Each structure stands twice: as structure tokens, then as C-alpha cells.
Length: 445
Ligand code: FAD
Image (tube, rainbow, N blue to C red; front, side, top):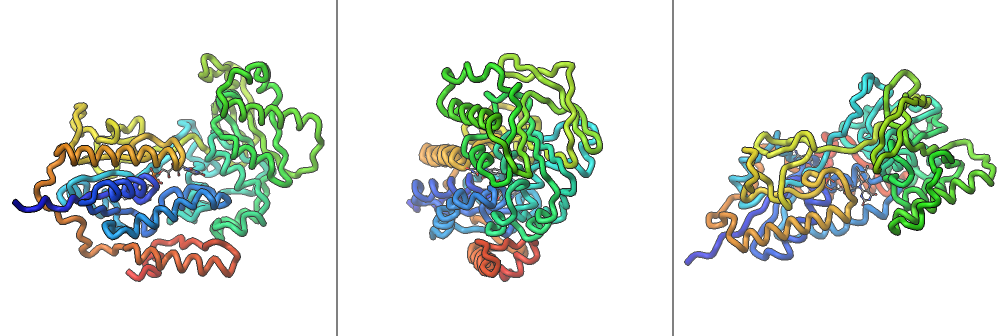
């Protein structure tokens, strides 16, 4: 009897979900080989292009991903996009199992008139701009006005507020792109409004991010005391993380009444306001009331000054290939515990096709949550293989790079070395290459 052929697994997308799933598979399936195909010439997804430049410690996960990438049973193929360079059917012919982890590269919209005007941009694009995502360098956000209004109060919104309000010197030693540093050095922004539909007890930012804001030099945080009426009485009943966050907000509110500030910039969190309309230089909000945790607009209106509006109400995924069973309304791949459902809208599982990370769960959760989710899906792949639920009886060829200019892990190492070297001269951890053509040149392909 001939030995069972090596199990070939393809992972699409080299972000945290892809790398953590690969790590689990390599450890627990001794007869598998894993190929990662990635759209960009460079790996790491939102760890490179999302996580704020002044949070370098968060990026340490890259060391773990690098170890995984250098495993003898893993191959990396950068500059290969599902949907344009390869098709899902093609990959399924070449592999016993395909795991989709290509993330969320779109953003939710407010669905307001005038939203397409140039002074309204998504936080996603702004983040991509300062982080050097190829193609994002020509955004040219207008920072010539005094007021920026951010719609949304999640950690991405707070990251963006911090980037706008941080002293430039603090950013110069990060890997913020040069063109963004240059634009920020000319910024006239003095006030950042951070607006949410619901109240302080529903605030989506976390305590670490708030603490950082409160500590920013030359920035005063100003809360509205009306937003906090009745909140102090509820603190004791709150679950612990929410309790600590609320206590910190209340303390800061209390301090602002007592202390005078000479700060020239302001961070202004505003609760209970739902976006209503956009005009030149202003944004109109409905005053809301909370009913069972839901924000219900009242007839009252408030206008906030807004030379620039940043929409930060969430990411969503796109359907990279017509053969993927995609829930367009929710913006994620239809699945049950990471097993992708058939395209025919039945609820049966499409054997051999999996999804993990933001593409499967929707765009929520931090790297740690993404890690647990990816491990769980990889475990299901191992179990399905063990239960013979996938056809692994025939051998499969795996990815064959024909005429496509593929960036291997060695190619990425050359890009990485080059970026670190260029960064040194400027006292930065790296100077990111922002053009794909330049990445390919440096990678030597
Ligand atoms: P991604 O990281 O998006 O990876 C997807 C990968 O797939 C990318 O490399 C992409 O290029 C690739 N891809 C896309 N399309 C294709 C295609 N068609 N073919 C092939 N490849 C493709 N978490 C923290 O723990 N701490 C933080 O400080 C933090 N900050 C964040 C800041 C921002 C602005 C954002 C948006 C998120 C932040 N997160 C943070 C959350 C964290 O980034 C996510 O949990 C995590 O990146 C999700 O991993 P993923 O692999 O699902 O997606």
C-alpha cells in the first residue's frame, strides 16, 4: 500500500489569522505542507498597515510569524492575489484544503448625502495613509482646518485622534511614512471631536487607549458633564473592565473641572449623538436617547465644526472570488465554526474550504482574539483530516508560480533589510517602501 500523499494546505492572506493558523497546522499535522499566498509583496496584514506606528510593542507578533514563515514545511508567495492572479477553483484543484484569511479591506459607510465629498474620508484610508499601504500615499487629507470630527469611538478612532494630536517629535521616531510626517508637520488641527451614538457606558475604546490620550502632552481632554448624568451611580454594578474604564472617564471629568490647562490642543469625546448630515465645514448630529442600550434619535440637533470628517464605524470584507459564499450585507464569508458553507445558499458545509480571522468573524477583535479564532479553525481542519472528511487520497501539486512575479520569503527579507537600513539614517525602526514596483525591485523579482 502506497503512503498517503502529503497534505497540501493553502492559506490565502498573510495577516495574523493566516500566520496563526499556519503555526497550528505545522505543529499538529506532521504530514502537511502549508503555502501562504498574499496579495501584497509584503506580509503581516494589519499588523503592518493597521496597528498604530506608536504601538511598536504590538508589532512584536511579527517575530512569531517570522519563525512560522521559516518553517521548512511553509512557503510564502507574495504579490499573488486571489481573484486576479489565482482563482478559488484553481487553488482547490491544487490543494487538499484552502483556508481564506484575507481580512477586511473595505469600510462601512454612514449612508449620508455628501459623504463622497473630499473632506469626508474613512479612518481606514487615513490609517493606510500614515502606515504606507501601497496606493494610499495620494490621499492628501486636508489638515489645514482647526476641527476634525471623527465619527465612531472604537480603538481605531482613538488611534487616529492620537496620530492627529501627538507631538510630531514623538512620531518621528516611529515608522510613520515620511510623507505623512511631512503633512502632519503642517497640520493646523487643534481640536478632535470623537463622536458616538451611545453613552459612556457603551464606549467602544479600551482603557489603555484612553490612558494614552489622557497623557498626551499639550492636549487637554474635555468631556461633557451632561453625558455623564446618572453614570456615577451605576459604576459599582458594572463588570470589571467596564467599571475601570468608566471610573477613569469620571476621574478625568472631575479633574477637568478642577484643573486649568494651558494645552493648545483638545480631545473632545462626545456621546449620544448620531450622524445626520454633512455640510461644508460642519456635521449635523441628532441628539440620541438610550433605550435598552440602543441609541434612538430625538428631534434635537447639534452641529459640530468639522473641517475634516473621518468615518470610523468599522471595516468590512469583500468577496474576492465569485465561488465564495459571501454574505454581502454583513460583509463576511458564510461559515460554521470556520467551515465555509456552500454557495448554493444551503446550510451545508463545502468540504475542504475554510475561513478564519476578520473575513470569517467580521471585523472585530484584536490580534489575540484573531489568534484564538485561527487556532480553533486550524484545529477543525486537523479534525476533518483525521476523520477523512476531506479527500486526501490523491496527491496535489500545490502552487506553481508561472510567469507571475512572486515574492518569496527571501524576497521579503531583502525588503525588510532595506527598510530597516533606510530607517536607521532617520532614527526610525524602518522606512516603509510604499510602492509595489519598488518593493519588487528591492525583492529582486
Ligand atoms: P488582516 O490583518 O487584514 O490580514 C489579511 C491579509 O490578507 C493581508 O495581508 C492582505 O493584504 C491579504 N489579502 C487581502 N486580499 C487578498 C487577496 N485577494 N488575495 C490574497 N491576499 C489578500 N489589534 C491589536 O491587538 N492591537 C492593536 O493595536 C490593533 N490595532 C489595530 C488598528 C487598526 C487600524 C485596525 C484596523 C486593527 C487593529 N487591530 C489591533 C486588530 C488586528 O489588526 C486584527 O485583529 C487582525 O489584523 C486581523 O487579522 P486577519 O488576518 O483576519 O486580517
